[in-house]
Each structure stands twice: as C-alpha cells, then as structure tokens.
Image (cartoon, rainbow, N blue to C red):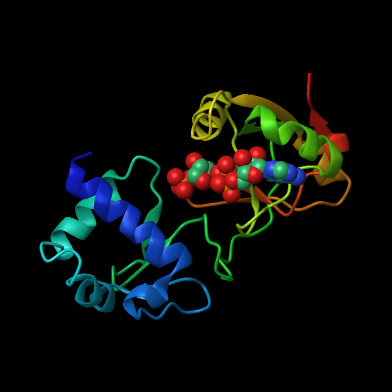
Amino acid sequence: MGIDHKKISKFLSLVLRHRPDKIDLQLDKEGWAVTQELLEKAKKHFPQLDTALLTEIVESNDKQRFSFNSDGSRIRASQGHSLTVDLGYSPKLPPEFLYHGTVEKFLDPIKQNGLLKMSRHHVHLSRDTDTAIKVGSRRGKAIILRIRAAEMHKDGMQFYESENGVWLTDQVPASYIEFK
Ligand code: HQG
C-alpha cells in the first residue's frame, strides 16, 4: 500500500466510521455515504482523490474495510464504527471457537467484566489466530484469547459476520473465554 493509499484509507475510516461531521458528510442509517458527495467533500484534504483512485483504494485495502453498493453510487465502512449504524448483517451461527487479540494490561478487567465493546459497536473477533495476533499487536505483545463461540450461541447470544469477515457480538461474558 503506497503512502497516499494508507493516508486516504485512514481518512476514510475516520469519516465513514467515526466523524463524518469533520467534512460535513451525511451517512444514512445503514452507514452509507453518497460516493460523489464523499469525493467532493474530501477534495480539500486529498485533491488527487477521484473515482478511479477511490475504487483502487477500496479494492486493494488489506482488510477490505470499505465497500460500495451494487452500482457504486454509495460507499460505507464494513465494520469498526463508533457511530450508531445498522449494518443490516443477519445473525449467523459462529464456528466453535473465535479468537480475540489483546494485551496483558487488559487481562484483569477482561477476567472481571468479560470482553466489552468499549468505544465500538461490537466486540470484534476473528476466525483465525493470525488475525487476532495482528489485532493484539497494535497495542504491544499480543495475548490471544479463545472464545467458546458456539456455546455462547447455544446460550442465546447473537453473532454477525461483517462483509470483510470480522465476527461481531455484543459482549463476551468471562465464562466463555479461555485464558489458558
Ligand atoms: C479491550 C482494528 C478492558 C480489547 C483491528 C481491545 C480490529 C477491554 C480494546 C478492530 C475489555 C478495544 C477492533 C474490558 C475489551 N476491559 N479492556 N472489559 N474488553 N477490552 O480497537 O478488538 O484497522 O475497540 O481487548 O484490526 O482491538 O480499525 O477493539 O484491546 O479488527 O479496521 O479494549 O479494529 O481494525 O479496542 O480492534 P478496539 P480491537 P481496523
């Protein structure tokens, strides 16, 4: 990913997940922005950003963080919002185990309160440990927690899988977490 791509991707995360007001962008209740409006309003920050570059950034994004609707007229972040949005994902049966990457300093509070969504919409979990290691490593030495997801589901808790393969749930009570 080139420097421009990375900068623009971070900017897209900011305005599509957290602060559309920064550029006076409107998101609908499902989190969609009108692509042309985004391009227009992003111009001040990234004069080079046009439909072709935006498409390239969306398609090459390492985590497929953004998606267009079917005709490309709208764009949204596939997960990771702090804004209230209804992404419209349907509840789904999770695999037996899901993984969460965190760091040592959060272990005690997680043992106490389980995994909480903190400032985001959901707790983020992954199907594989590699992804969890990457997520945890953003904050230091990663510690991987294994979550008994199928058991949570059996006990009535709901799971969603975002368009880019992130598993989402409201919270994970400590009793379903394997701390090793
Ligand atoms: C921790 C990035 C104390 C939790 C990543 C985490 C991911 C608690 C932090 C995505 C806690 C929240 C999400 C509790 C959870 N007490 N700490 N009870 N429960 N925590 O960033 O999962 O690049 O909101 O362990 O790659 O780290 O933005 O969540 O360390 O996919 O697309 O509180 O964000 O993706 O941090 O990361 P976050 P996360 P993007």
